[in-house]
Image (cartoon, rainbow, N blue to C red; front, top):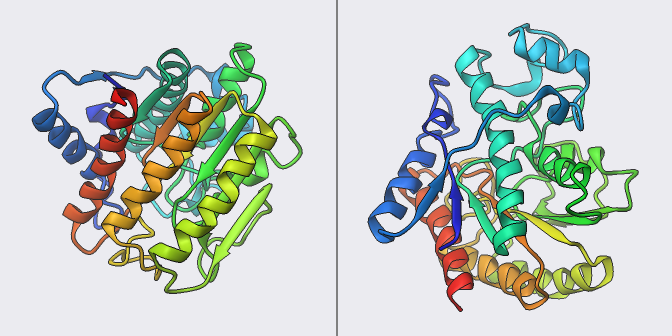
Length: 296
């Protein structure tokens, strides 16, 4: 069975907010209902040494001290000990997900994908860039040399793009709505989609580019930032993907990785549907596809 990484500490009080943090627990609960044999692994907090592989000492000091500074203000979230702990633990979760993917071919983090965090500042609901921390940790342990980030969240993974911008060992790919937050950084390959893009056009772009990335870059690990927010009923965007279209996206990407024997670490990333049950269903489908891949 695919290893799933999760902590109850991910579900924290952020007040009245568009970010439905309860989705993590709801996805976990649905998985437990559907798959009795499923294993959930509890992450541990990352060390300062691990966080410093990506983030600056000054920023981490501000964050852990709960100081409102230029580094922390852009999070668009409250700053409490509980929230900071959740984000730190989320980085530990993605480290564990990467490790388990390398051991098992695929692993899924019911959390993570906080791709807007930069080395020196928070941004866009993201305090720690767990995607980058996970990759850097695997490189530090010499488990991999090369990685690829396949980012299908509604928003460009700007923090991740900046972090790896001078690093040829990590290929960053982002397919996102162009006319939308954030101010764009330069990924190795960006597909900026027009408003109202639907399933067919979206999947055509993936079919054209993802195999080429995997064949040319030859990553030893893919971190898949899945995202439920390209959905047509999402509150923060205006792409028009259906729930079935998003499931087809997951199937295509995970099959292409599996076909080449590339270990894949999945993070859930964003999702802000008008009905949170839709967000949960989209994330649940990503998990189901991962399970199907391992069983095929």
